[in-house]
Length: 191
Image (cartoon, rainbow, N blue to C red; front, side, top):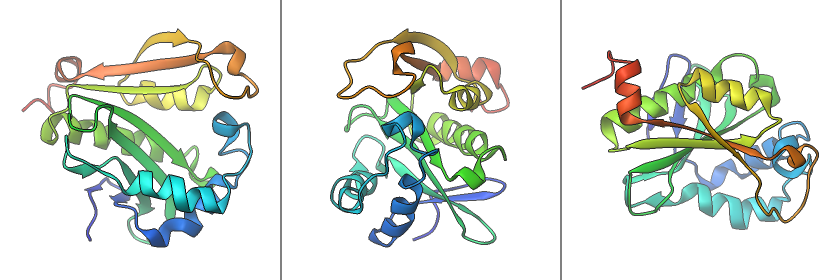
């Protein structure tokens, strides 16, 4: 199966069961998992029985998967994944943007490049009306990616999370971008 989306440097493709080892490796890096699980790795069995089925799910509202394996186009080196998942399974109106990349990919613009391409595709081809993204308030790197991708700060909120991780006392932040805002700010994309 070919890529879902190509950027200048990356191909975003659907996940397969063969991606288990790469996902275990990605989620095994304490720095990658710092703002997700406090640095604890995701067990292989959880990747195989919980995470992978979620990554493979097709959403009727968009007719697509909600998660995409990101690879360098020329080498097919696995970089991590991007999320562009409808919040309501049968509607494309609102999607959540997310990303989890290997530490070696940080600081090279991959997260912004992939996020912008997904936003563009969502607004031009998938019927998306609003893109939302969330992270811990203290996750400055992820917040910068959201801002560079055109999303705007909406709010800080405090959830009732099952366990506390360092920095969670500062809450979570939501960023968002509507199609009309995107069209106003990037008229070259308007269709």
